[in-house]
View (cartoon, rainbow, N blue to C red):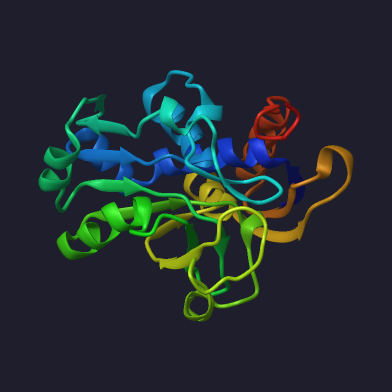
Length: 251
């Protein structure tokens, strides 16, 4: 069976979050390990799916893109979610960094997804911000990095090439904060991977954007067994009914 579906930004984020929670690496870390959910608009949905509780999503972000590269004015109101063996844990920053190892997971969102599966993370902080804090450590120790990101953030350029051109001290003019971009590799979970993880259905990204309720949307083609495609399509329809005014930019 084939079906098509359109997901707005909040529906995409919820779908991706459910895919992240279904990922084997994350499920194993929930049973026995540490999971760090860093700040981000998609990660806010991931945090809700992992804890089963709503959070203040508008505060759960650091850098944001509105009409410029900017800082979330509410960033000081939220902190990263840390789970130890599936339960929220209050662990000091230095203690947390010292304890992470194989079997643990850092969940980090991004701003761009290139054709090679590399994610670009904009960095305004001079020491790299969240990337600088977690990524070198994770790569050195074998901590898994899971990257929730929508295919709506797809770009044609190589992130590696962009990283050679950008940098906060190279950019002379622009709105908001000048940034560098970091090429982040890990276990990418977009709408495509989420549909596969949840239903075993093949999803293909066929269009982006639209008008009215379609602004910021992605259009997918779903292919697979009849029952699985119907289940995937039904879930997408239910998520579309939960449009979030914060994510959709209506507040």
